[in-house]
Image (cartoon, rainbow, N blue to C red; front, side, top):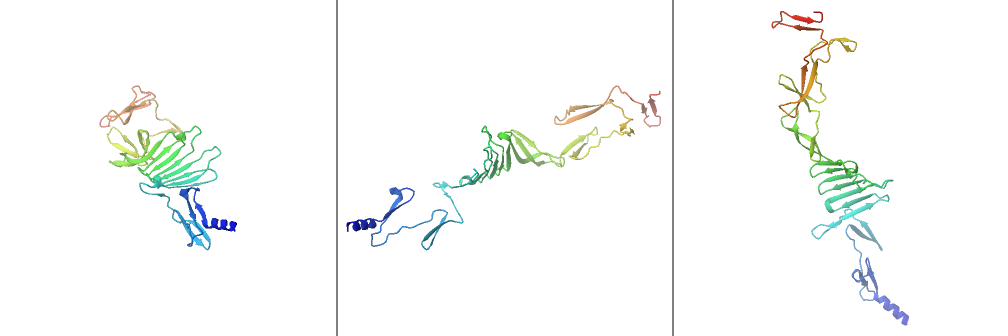
Length: 284
């Protein structure tokens, strides 16, 4: 009888249920000896759904999952999915970031891709070097519409953007150009609509676009013996390259006749009315 009484007493006390750890803060008891049955329930936390199938309790993941809490007292949410070879995908509520880590190669290095909603950037990061230097990378900046590129070991960084550039051959206003920023230097990229301007003694500048031909002519009819030109001389005309004194950005190619001419066969002089020519040749 004593044993039966003891067992009934234990049964009437019920049992304890705890979560995480068996502490007073995380524990509650369920009584069995009361007239009214005691009960405890199951609930679904954030992102989970709960259902009952007979005596089975089924948990499942909701179609729409929200992690973290907005507001001053909130907490940033984060989801990380790890692969067996060191690759991972991480979604962070802070700054709206998605990080993708590639698998590590035989050298222990890996690549990564980062998408940030804060500034609208996409970053592609190469492996970090053995000496700890940054790897090569490409960053697309949505904030200012630029592309940042770093070379090997994170060096030789340039930023590519667009801007109002120098006037082209076709316009008077600055054209929209691709600009490569190298430190404090801005290098504008030329297009096929750009080119060079040529100006002679008549003072008229002629613009020639890239991939077009400039013909330089002297007026003499060429006489050939097979591949050899036989009626022109050498070393009688010099070309001097100088900076244009009117514009320090322009160059001048100055064509000059030698003071002492050689290898000439004849010279013909005409009167003003071209009625009385005079010829000097080597037979005179």
